[in-house]
Structure formats: C-alpha cells, structure tokens
Length: 204
Image 1 (cartoon, rainbow, N blue to C red):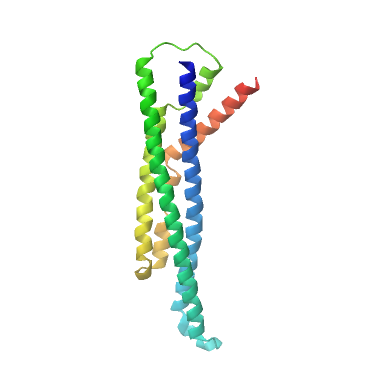
Image 2 (cartoon, rainbow, N blue to C red; image 1 turned 180 degrees about the vertical axis):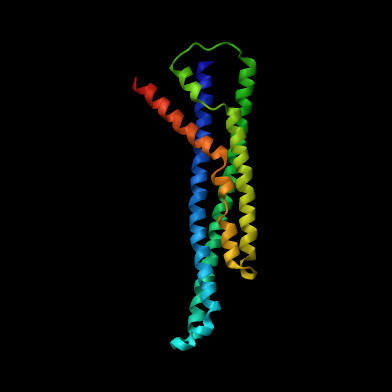
C-alpha cells in the first residue's frame, strides 16, 4: 500500500514539474514574440514618417523596400512562434489528460484501501505532497487558460495587417491573469517545498 502511495506522489510531482516547464516555455515564447511585435511597431512608425525623409536626402523607395522585407520576415517569425505555441497548448491538454488519469487511479486506490499508514519518513514527505486530485484541478485550470490565451493571440496575429500595432502590442503583452494566477504560484511553491523536504529527509 505504501509503495503505491509513493508511486502516486512521485507521479503527481512529475506532472506538476511538467506544468512548471510548460509555463516557462510559454514565458520564453511570450518574450520572443513581444520583441518581434515591438520591431513591427517600430517599422510601422518609420513608414508613417516617410514624408520627413526628403530633407535628409534619403532614398524613400529603397528604405521602404528594406522595411517591407524586415516586416515580412518578422511576420514569418511570429507565425513560426505561434505554431510552436500551438504545440505547447497541445502539451498542456495532454498533461491535463495524464493528470486526470493519475487522479482517477489514486481515487480508485483510496476507495479500495482504507487502512491507516504508519508514520515514516515517506509519510512525512506525504504531508508536503499535493493530492493527485488537486494536481489535476490545478493543471486543468491552467490548460484551459493557456488554450484561451493562445486563441486570443491567434486572432491578434490575423488582425496585424489591418490594425493599430501599438494596440496589438498592448493586448499581446497582457497576461497578468495567467502570470499572477494563484494556481501558478501554488504549483511553484509546492514543488519547492516538496524538493526541500525530500532533500532534508534523504540527508538524515
């Protein structure tokens, strides 16, 4: 019985570690796409100020050609990042399925085994652990949020050619509801606590 509980605990924290890794990957893509959008915004502003170039004896047509090339290149890079983001969203969905499977197995095990477990170093770690059911709830919440955010970015990307880029950039950067969501903080804190307690017990 204890071995099975240890297995559930390890599986649960493996799932939470995957969630933390996916969050970090998402944050990396967010930073990269914001840099691309900032470049697009700057290029657009330069094109809007072309009428000022004559006084500086600048070849407007040649500059416009270079700016257009850079703009198109940034759009291609942005599209590539969105495709990578789609993979991250799919990974979140798979993670939610894996977490649900782990929670269902754990619940079935608990319902069939109601014996008390003697106090041990393993049960001390268990005190800091997250239940498979709680882990599934956290992961499924984040999977939904990231899925919704991905589709919002998809729509913003489609709107770039006909919209104000400053507005697009502002909307794109608004992810506070995910970055500061209580669940993301809980996962990070519980992972750190579990690793700290596990390391302490193993050193005894």
